[in-house]
Amino acid sequence: MRAAIYTRVSTNDQSPEMRISDLRQYCMQRSFDIYKEYLDKGISRTKDSRPALNELMADAKREGLMRYCAGDLTGCKINQASHHST
Image 1 (tube, rainbow, N blue to C red):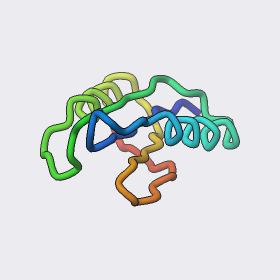
Image 2: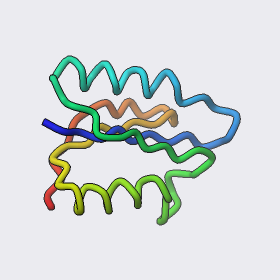
Image 3: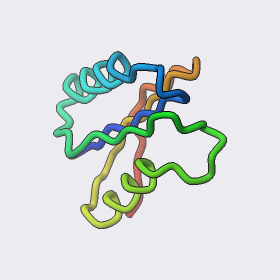
């Protein structure tokens, strides 16, 4: 199954590498084929518009992605796969 990885960090000083690595591992353990990785850096989660998230949603609709794995570094431990309906 194809999946996309999305992560976000609030400031440009934060490194998303650890979270991305965790999400890659999560996908590998479930035999998900990673379609693409999306990163919003320096974007608050309170923003209504996040460029990489918007791109992910557009790609999901166009490419028929069935799952996405999302995570951020705000203290929330989001490390899950979710269905995305197209």
